[in-house]
Length: 87
Image 1 (tube, rainbow, N blue to C red):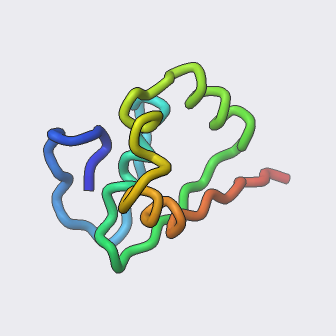
Image 2 (image 1 turned 30 degrees about the vertical axis):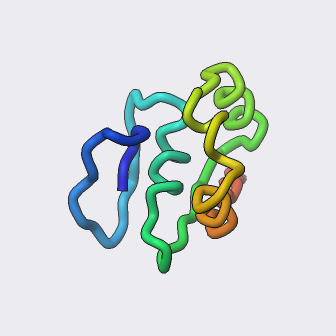
C-alpha cells in the first residue's frame, strides 16, 4: 500500500491505519487504490464537498489519468467513502 503513486515505496504491513498530517489531498485515495485485490477500504471525511474541492484543486495527474480504467476502476469500486457527522 502507498500514499503516493508508483514508484513510491510501499508502507509496512498493518491491520489498521490512521493517516493524519500534512499529506497532499489525494494521499488517502492513493492508499485506497493500492489495496490488494481481496481487501476493502473505508475512507472517512468530515465533508464530501471539501474532499472533492481539495481533490479538484490539487489536480493529481495520476488520479486523472488512471482512476477510471482497468484494475484501478475495480479497486475504486471496493472503496467506501463515509461522512463523519459530529453532533
